[in-house]
Length: 247
Image 1 (spheres, rainbow, N blue to C red):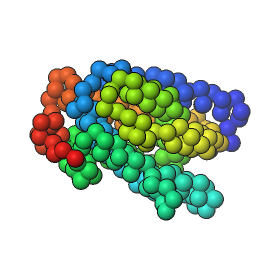
Image 2 (image 1 turned 120 degrees about the vertical axis):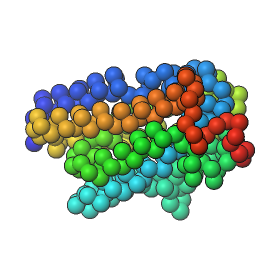
Image 3 (image 1 turned 180 degrees about the vertical axis):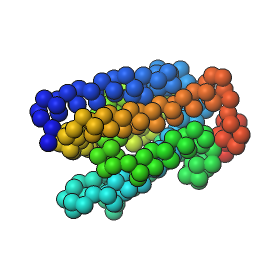
């Protein structure tokens, strides 16, 4: 087991990765929250982000399949319920679809992912492959971008409500539960990583896993920026504002 000092050092290392690489530093994120985008650009963001939302429970199910301890598996299962829902909870994916509904996107079109950018599709597939192909420790470490998500959620909700007259509290309903779910998930995942990253080699792999996940999120915003802001090169077959079907 890693010493207290090595655990503290590793946590500082992981938080430093987030401060440099988390996608709250991306120009698209800053434009989104500052009110610099038009409705069509926000539609493109919401449609592409759905691909990421849809893969999250698949990613978590893949991680669960590799956990031998039933108690740990039960803890991780809550993540799947949070996104897929159950009898008493509609789940994050459904709340995201309500967001795209409110932006005027056709729900079937969003679910089909036909209009998503190739880079978005590649990024989310790479994330699923990563948690499937690498060690359980690395897979869990890749989820630690949630250490930084509460601040981006708070900025997103307040910024979009303040700057876009077509965005309402109902539009942003997806994010409110994440303010409590994400810290809960981080508490478990971070404790697991700090306990099990008990060598320099494992700590390096954990840091690389978090860096990879930051790159997954960053690359999605890169693609959105290039297609819908500058230079505005939308790949063939992808969401084009003038061609999309209304809700």
